Length: 236
Ligand code: ATP
Ligand code: BTN
Image 1 (cartoon, rainbow, N blue to C red):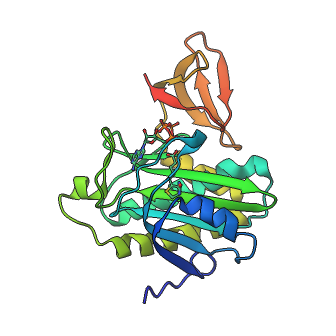
Image 2: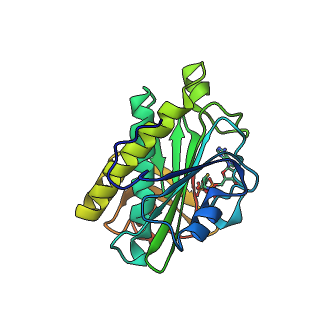
């Protein structure tokens, strides 16, 4: 019914009306499911962001996770996050919405968060979770595709597009991992003042390096590389 013509991502789709968290279920299913299996739900009751933060997931959005077995080391996890972010930005583009990546794992439209990416890896398997606000109500300060376009967006079309873009981005990640970083960089909000929360680092977010670290230039000229992990930036 979905007629997904993809090579890996979406070879199998497990759809649920409701689940606690598609990432948690995908991590369990990863023990016996093949690479490319997607878990998608209408709503999540315990959707998670990074560091256990709550991710609001009422009906109307795309809440999905894909099981991947990329030939990469754990230090390459940021590249999987970027692969998700690139696929989301390209999906938004298809619907006429210009989105930007906010390092490390958010996609913003009009300066507000439209999507979040959560990649969790263990022993060769990575679960890549994506939450994209489509027609659902959003928390204050966030935004949905419906808010931008002014009317409901066909959810299945958004899902199908996202799967196709993820499949392409995954091929690229495996063939030329560095090019995923380059693609994410070209869609990232850079050249602006930022504060690295809790780290006493302030400066201009200049660039990202080949490992996906954010390069911040302090007013003194000193350059700091911020490692993807639990850190967040705020635009100053
Ligand atoms: P960072 O900018 O580093 O990603 P963050 O504050 O956005 O930091 P995350 O852990 O990435 O934190 O994302 C979780 C946060 O996203 C929650 O704390 C909440 O503020 C916000 N959030 C929750 N649900 C949604 C949603 N459906 N759409 C947009 N934002 C949401
Ligand atoms: C973030 O911004 O911190 C990441 C949010 C990730 C949300 C998605 S929704 C599908 C998947 N299941 C979860 O519990 N979280 C991710």
